[in-house]
Image (tube, one colour):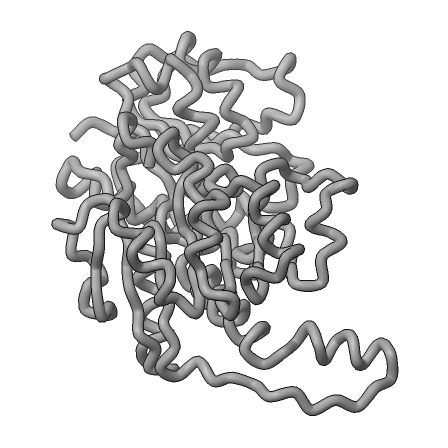
Amino acid sequence: MEKLNLGFLYRNSNSWWNIPYITQKLSAIKNIEISLFDVSNPQSIIFPNNLNAIALLPSEAELIPSFLSQNKNIYWVHSMFAGVDKFLSLKEISDNKKIILTNSRGAFADSLSEFGIFSMLFYSYNSPAYIQAYSQKKWIRPTNKMLKDKTLIIVGYGYNGANLASKAKAAFDMKIIGVRKNIQNEHGKEFLNELVSIEKLDEKLPEADFIISFLPHTLETKNIFNLEKFEKMKNTCVFINLGRGSSVVEEDLVKILKQKRILGASLDVTQNEPLNENSELYELENVFLSCHSADNTDEYFNQAVEVFIKNLKLFLDEGKFYSEVDKIKGY
């Protein structure tokens, strides 16, 4: 294989990037040439013409057409985050069969699964009531609930879901139902009590003590959690969204939470981010908002880079990619 000319697009003002770490990790890999492009000022970019691949954050996706127009030999574009919505909105990516798109799928599975466990414990052990009592200097002793034997439904059962299921099964012996589009895919099935297709979600909702969504943003998943779905949940159920806000009809969720038709919600993502300060979600005592930071740990950057390197090594060794995105499915 000829030498791979790889370009990283970053903003010097964005503290997320650790350029020395990238160069150190990649320096040991043979047959690649690395170029770094600070795109803080797009007007001053001097475009190269010899790149085969670029890696960047979704926030820089608008620069892709310019890089592609100057580099006719680019055949690989990598998103340093899992989300690829902004990439697929570009016809230069979605309509170009020559370009392979990969992402950092699974990079943040450990942090997201830990946050999912935290969210379940938060409600099982009456954290909202304790926090309120503390602020009012009251001594309360509510009855807590254990996670053991509780039923957890994971919707969008993939890398993140399997990581969470392994922890929930091993540590708490929960009953776990995985829900995914393709039940022929058996990844992570060993951690489940049951694996069902997305078409059977409605049948399973009444069984759940906890529902955790890892659904991506696609046309098929948009507004999937609506009033009809929420009304099928029992009133002790907790809804947790660690996927994308577009999967939830927020007006319906607010209505259900106001009526206390479910116990509560833990929302890492919302339809609009940042969440509008006038949103009723801010006013509800049975909502925990984490501002899309569930995976924002001190290992965040390193985890993303490791997935990129996994893709890179597999491509150099076997001509394949670890986390290639299906442009039709959108994930």
